[in-house]
Length: 451
Length: 184
Image (cartoon, rainbow over all chains, first blue to last red; front, side, top):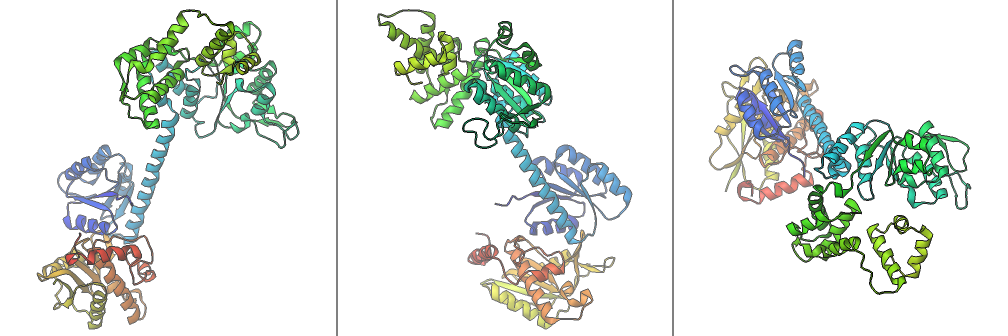
C-alpha cells in the first residue's frame, strides 16, 4: 500500500492554506493546515510532517522564518518550503540559510510544486530505506550482539569502536567460546571497511598445504586437483578484513609466508609467479599463550610482534559471572523463539546453578547448555532440574571416583567427557588428553564414539 | 432519488453544457439536471491577476445546490486560480459534493491556436471525469493514461485517455453501489 505522507501548510490566510491543502489532497497526501506559527508547532508535536509549507509573511506572532526555525527544532527531519509573494534574493538567501529546503514564489506553476513535492518525497523514501537497511546491518554485527555489564568487557567494546577505522593488526586472545570472532566482526562492521568483505579462516581446521592454498589461492595445475586459478581468502578480503582464527596452530612455513604478507601486503598464489597486492586488515585470534609459544620456539617472535600491534584479551566467562544471567536470558529468548517453544525465562534456582558453574567452554558452552535445556524442557520456565546434568558434569570435574570397570571403558568415558567439554573439537580434545589427533581418531573408531 | 446537478457560472456555450451533461449521464447512476446559470460572485475576480478565484466560485456553486443534490458540478469560461498556483484546470472537494471546471485553458485559442471544437470537447470530458472522480474519493493516479492522472499542463490533459484505469474504475463502481455514492 502507498505510504500517505503528511504535509502541513502554514498561512494566516485561510483561503491560501485551504486551497493549497485541497490541491495537495487531490494528489493523495494527508494535509493539515495551521493559521499561525504556534498552531503549526502544536500540530508538529503530534505529527511528523514530511513537508511543511510555511508562508514567509504572517502578521502578528511568529513570522515564517521564526516558525521555520522552531519547526526545525521540533521536527529536524521535516523538509521546509518557504512560500513568499515577493521574489527577492535577500529573503531567499535568509530562508535557505536558516534551513529551508526550498523556496517558492506565489503564484507558481502547478508543475513546479508537483515536481518539488515528489522530488522531496522520493529523497525521503530513499533516506528512510537507507536508515532501515543500515540498522539491519549494524544490528546483525555491531557490539549489540555482545551482551555484557562487565567493566572489562565494556572497555573492550569501547576499544573496538576506537580502533575500528584503523588498519592496524589486532590480536584477540581468549579461551574457546569467549566470542573472539564476534569481537573481530564488531571491529570490522564499526569501521570504514564495513561495506567490504569480512572473511573468516579457521587455521586449525586445515592441513598446511590446504591452508596455504586457502589463504593465498592457487594457479592451475599447482597441485593435484587444482584445475583452475582460485583466489585465496586474502584476495577475497581485499579492501576488508581477514580473520585468522587459531593463528597459534599454523606451521613454521606459513608463519613465514604470513609475516611477508603483513610486511609487504603482497604474496604469490600457490604455484604462481605473479605477485598479488592486497589491502587487507588482519585480525588474528588464538586461545594459546603466544608469548609462551614464542619462548618455546614454536611461534616466530617477529610474526608475534607484527600481529600483536593491538591486543585484546577477552576474559573467560567465569571471570565475568555477572554476565551469566544476562546472557542466559538472551539465549532463552532467542533460542525459544527460533525453536518455537513457549519458554519465558529461567527460575532463580536454575540461574544460581548457572552462575556457580565454571564454564570451561565459555559463552558458547552456555549457549549450548541453554539450547539443550530448552529442547528437553516441558515447562514455561527453565528450572534447576533442567540443568541437573550440569551439576553432574561439575562434580565429575572435581572428584575422581574410579568405578570398577575395565581400563578400556575408563578410556572410552574419558574421551567422551573431554570431547563434550571441548564442544567436539578433536584437536583440543587430543591436546587435553595428551595424545595426537590421529591417535584420538583411532580411539574414536575403536570405541565407536561419534562426535 | 438523489440528483447530480450541473450549473454554469457566467456565460457558457450550450454545446459545452450538453457535452458535460452527456458525460455525467454516461458514467453516473443518478439523473443529471441543469440549473439556471449563476452570475460570477462579486468578489470572485482577482483584478491583479486577471483571473477568477476558484475557491469563491466553488462556494457559489455549493450555495446553489438543491437539497437533493448528491454532487454539483460548476462549469465556467473564467480562468481559475488559487493563491499559490498560477492556474487550475478545475477543482473538487475530495470526497465532497462540489467540483468546478474551467473551459478557459482547454481552448486551443488560449495557446494562440485556431479554435477546435473536437479538441475542446475531448479535454472537457476528461476534466469533468477527473473532477467528478475526486468527489468520489479518487486521488491522482500514477497510470499516465488514466483520466485521474495529474495534469499540470495542457499536454498532460491531451496525453491521458477519456477513461478510468481498472483500479480507479473499480473504486468508482464500488462507490456507485452505495447509497448516494457515499463511503461505505
